[in-house]
Length: 282
Ligand code: AMP
Image (cartoon, rainbow, N blue to C red; front, side):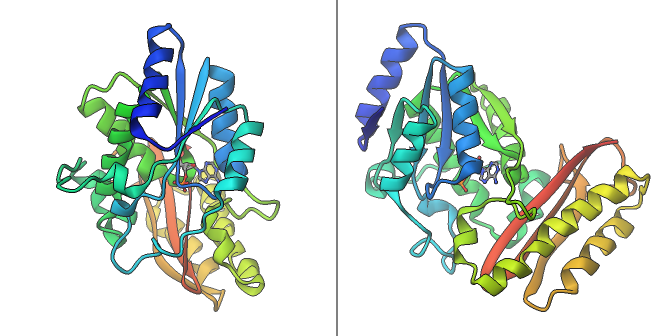
């Protein structure tokens, strides 16, 4: 497995592979890897000749009061995990290389896809994500890129961006990997105290309840979100940022549950913001 820090080194390897007719799978991450990330890497390694993983805590997607400085990092452990998961190249650039002095170009996906849910509470998030993913795509030259459904709104934004900008890249959606008690795996789970970790179970319990109600025939989004809300509100250590049921394609709120539906929530447990969701086709 190659480990490179410079954009020019990563691009030169990617080009070499592309020019030899090899398929390249790409998994962008912010590191502190867990089994959720590794499921993407393993799938890419199974479906492509070469797999590139990027590890980059992207400053442009963090707001001024968010956790950029404290975001967990462990490059040595990440590299060992990537090697085990059969990555061929790990690209871990510095922020100064990715955003050089004078850099002032951003990619913005506008409208309903980014206005609500995480876009409402984190206004810098999707512009930062779309920009860094575009840059990483132009360096890694992937045939396919792998994203987790855990970040369902991000996935929808990336799919839209790839279509709108005519990028010749297949976006592959991968299921959410969970802990045994249901909590979606996340690098940010490491912020939780033992007490908060127990309290955090309400997040996935709310997801499973929303899913269950719709599968049982409930079609009123207000009733579904009310039941999800009740579960979270029963936990004193949890504070709801949002709980919504929207169209999985447009992120708009429907009158009635129909078609592809995304039930999504963001909940603070202490200072840690956790997200989770379900997607159903009814
Ligand atoms: P991050 O490092 O949080 O930016 O995540 C990098 C990629 O891993 C994104 O495509 C995430 O959606 C995906 N991911 C993160 N957590 C999980 C999980 N629990 N299950 C599946 N994919 C995940």
